[in-house]
Amino acid sequence: MLYALLYAIVRPILRLSGISSDAEAEVLVLRHELAVLRRQVKRPQLRRRDRLFLAAMNRVLARERWGAFIVTPATLLRWHKELVRRKWTYRRQPRQGRPPIDPEVRALIVRMAKDNPRWGCVRIKGELQSLGLVVSATTIRTIL
Image (cartoon, rainbow, N blue to C red; front, side, top):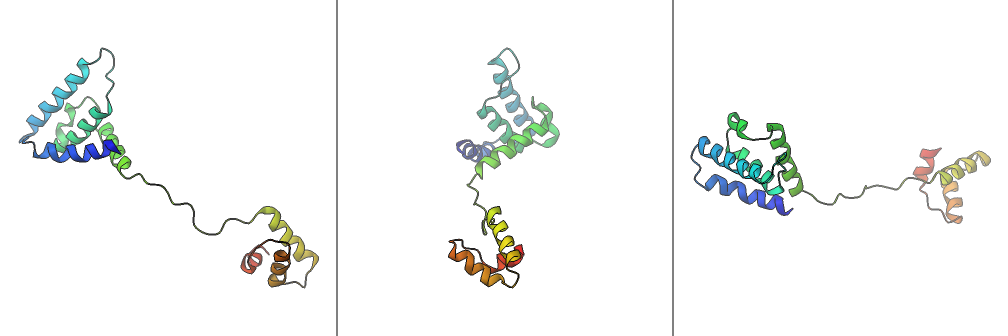
């Protein structure tokens, strides 16, 4: 969430920073990538703030100039989507509606209906209530 906020702040700052041409933006990207490469000898390990900067810069830089990045355009877009996704994280609501009927209760309803063919949904509902089970007549009708 913090990085999503930083990303949202960095993007307008980069737009307002006075970068007037694509060449200036490309030079800025190349300088940052050079700093990343100087930090290590092996394959560059980009930190979160590096990804944030590069994802924000790809919005400033024209798509034709994305060759300046050390990563592919698909990777840049994936980072951008990840930053946006992190911004909009919220708890999912639990499923709405009635809980499913227990298979044992379902079997009991079917057995009661077979043993007592003259009983209707309402009578079976009453018998189940006397046993301490609460099932609606509509559910019983659906099961039968």
